[in-house]
Image 1 (cartoon, rainbow, N blue to C red):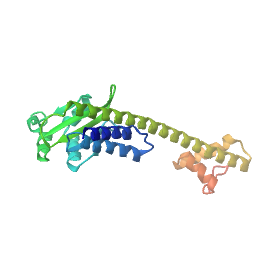
Image 2: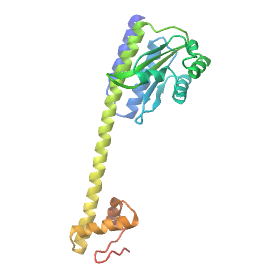
Image 3: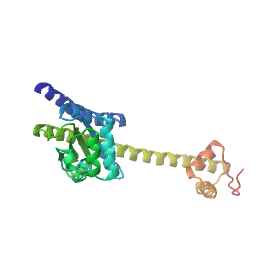
Image 4: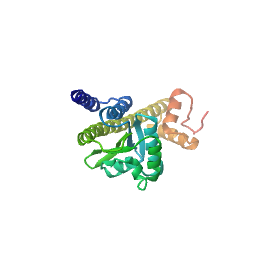
Length: 244
């Protein structure tokens, strides 16, 4: 049994450490983290919360309906061990949820009603940066075995590295897309300028003035006007700024 568990843990580490090539792969790895946490540790359900770009916590993955609802409840009420682990970067162990009613009244009551007796929240952390928490919900009271907690932290750390790497890749792709869009826009405008200048035998600055003036008068993006000229939808005159 111990050997099987060790093999499963290693397999989970390999899956979490694998390269993600897109949003689908990333989401799959997040689901792997919660699924394997339930299988490996003394937990009945698991959930994952991540900070969004705006700094708000969001439910990223869960193994069951109740786990996801409990995490949403914490976001809405601003209380609970999952939020505390994400905000402090420290493990929050709740061996007896019912006894934590004074600390987290809303969370405690709903968790007990859902059948959970214990919660262990592990931060997703890389040095000083905390991006969320992995949350393990148990049906019996008690603390996780030290080796289980250490393994859960290891999986959370590996997942954190993968998530942060993917965010860097996403940011780079977004920057490249914005740059390409700007280059494409400039190319279209230059083509329209050249076409008008050649047609009317005028300087390219004059041709650009026609495009710019039409865009301003009609409150249109300059690129849209340039595309309209090239497609024949917009006709500009250089002698006078009439449009037909």
